[in-house]
Image 1 (cartoon, helix red, strand yellow):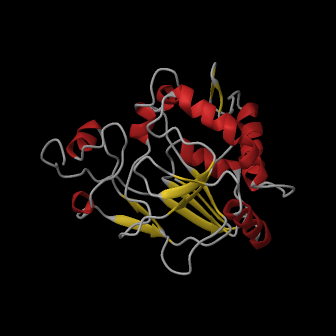
Image 2 (spheres, one colour):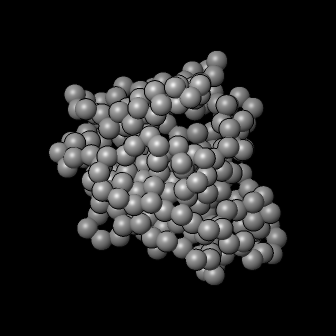
Image 3 (cartoon, one colour):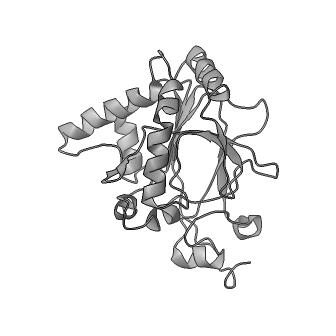
Length: 242
């Protein structure tokens, strides 16, 4: 149950850019600067690559069911509700399986990461994977959400889990910057699975009202009922930065 009476969510404008083609670093940086809320690139990588990644995911020996209250399957490691020691140990153990998702493919994830790293380096900014004395993160993780209600993944925000990641992480130190997720979609269902963005940036009081202060998950449908939203229709081969 919420820890206090829910307050009326504040409305924040949403700016989304959608187009077909390859993603470019200038657009990614626009999201990181807060100039855009979201970026949706259609047909950003090929159907053949998407199908191969999907096949590798389904057949991976590293495929696991989530057991943290969020319905889904994954290959890789998640920091959600974990201390640094556990997360980095999980990341190390999962690294061969993450690498095997791409096999001999031209890896679209590392291609984007590498291009952005070079561009930011030219601006005097270092881009790297999260690390600590306990280890380092992988370049990505693969997820399949399996919720059976209105949403395959319930409404959430990513800032809370980063803010509350703990002192052993670098994550909490960057939570006051723009927190963004770069999502690659190698497989999508025929119906459903779209990405819904609400015009709302929860603050601490909002999270407390929903009893999600440390996780950002899940927000109730009733809480978001009066908040305008935008829906992004996703297909295999798309990239979304949100």
